[in-house]
Length: 195
Image (tube, rainbow, N blue to C red; front, top):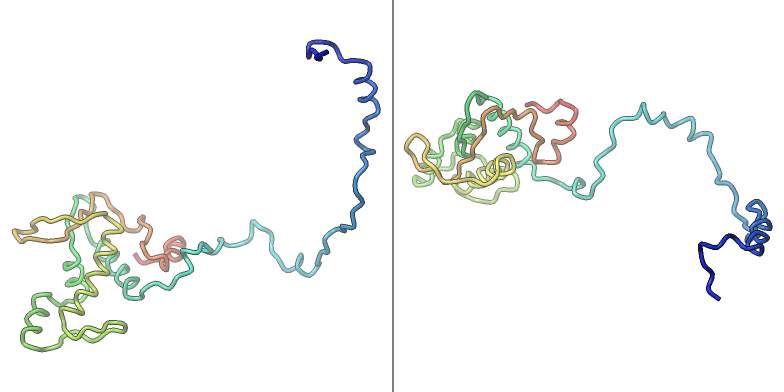
C-alpha cells in the first residue's frame, strides 16, 4: 500500500526519530591530528590590513616585454599629455616620432637615397637602412596608439594624405588611461608613472 504524504507520521517513524542522536553517530576512526603551527611564522607575518598590494601573478603578466615598445609607450603618453583637452585631435605615429626625436622622416628617406646612415643602430634591430630602423619604431608607436584609440583610418591632415591616423577624443586624459604594456602597470597603479 503506497504511503500518502498527507497522512500523519506513523508510530514506527516516531520511534526511529527518537532513537536518532546526532551526538552518537557511529563513524570510522580517524588518525588525523591538528595541523602543526609555527609561532615563528605567526610573529613574522603582518596583519592583512597592513600588507601591500597583491603582486601581479597572472600568467599573462609574467612575460618579458620589448623594451623599445615600453619606452615608446612612455613617449606616446608624454605626447598625448601635451594635447589640449578642449578639442579632439588626429594623431599619427610619424608625428610622435618626429616630435620625440627631432628627426624628420623626410630627412631619413633622403639620407637613404644618398646612402648615409643618420640613426644609430639600436639593440635588437638588424636593418641596415634609416627607413628600416624607422619602421621598427613606427610599428611600436602604432601598436600603442591602436591599443589606446582602436583601429586607425585614412584621412587628410593639413591637406596631406595620412595612412594611419587615430582620433584622440575631446577631454581625453592620458593619466587616467591604463598603459598597454604590463611593465608599466605597477607604476601607473601607484600614480608614479609620468605622465
